[in-house]
Length: 395
Image (cartoon, rainbow, N blue to C red; front, side, top):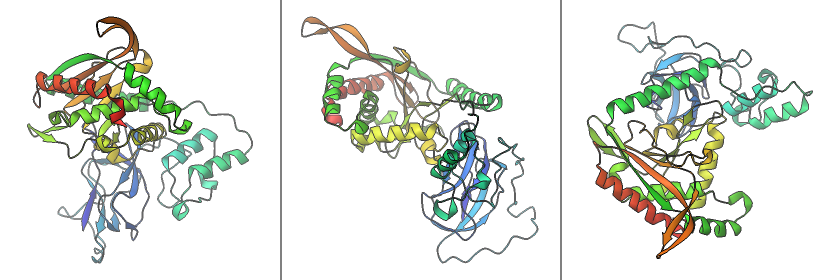
């Protein structure tokens, strides 16, 4: 019998609130299936199971705040007999609810979390709030009667025009909670990690010229942003300096099992998240672009998965769209490096003994001195520069 526990979605997470179960006892689940929605300071996160089998028992009720690592369900393997129904708990038995649990204050009176009604995706729930649609009146057309985003949109279009809801913004408590979570992670980072910082300026003219040519032959929906080039190059450069790709745990460097770049995404309600683009180094450039677009959309509609927040082995951040020329980022523990990019600017540049106007970008690296040193960091930035001079090899 496997124990399904409340996952950790970052070093700053101590507990999460179970919003709803998307399965019930007796349901068969496969590895990677979404089984629950958990609310953290980062928003509503879809939680997957990495154990295939049959849901035997749900231990925790929706609306309960649960510490990380607490058993919240039991999943039995195929053919394994069901566990006997629990009797009155004793000190040696698994509690029905964790001792540290406390009731969750409902965030929205119109959308109670209830295991008895049809399940609703976080995106559909948020859209229902925006449109003023009562979820209790809808019949879901999704799997097992789930209410989908399409169901909500259809109901909203059929209803009399409601007074539009204000643009989604965090409540004071939600915004403050996210800021506290970010502050705790960054304070820990600066307190515990001996950062070193390096920066260089990269001539991006050839890469941008190649990108313009490449986009002319692509359908509009498949065109690339230069950010995809930066993410792919950042991933490939890690193959040459692998000690920047991994984690610092138990006073030792633990290499990442793959190169999963966390792409920093600013949220409209405030704060940011950095979900993973898995196996970034092996993906085609168009696939990297599609994955990034998908993450941005789902991050801003509350549909990220737990693994996407726990998988990144390194983070890439950019403030170029805000006109910032150089970024000096802070490492997100337990990662050991973060790569920053500024805005693309035109500068006088020496090319073969002549001065030309070139489009350049500042690339910076913050790294953990326990896992690497400045020499290795410099080799990484040099590899990044070299890769961006041959953009066709990134495709």
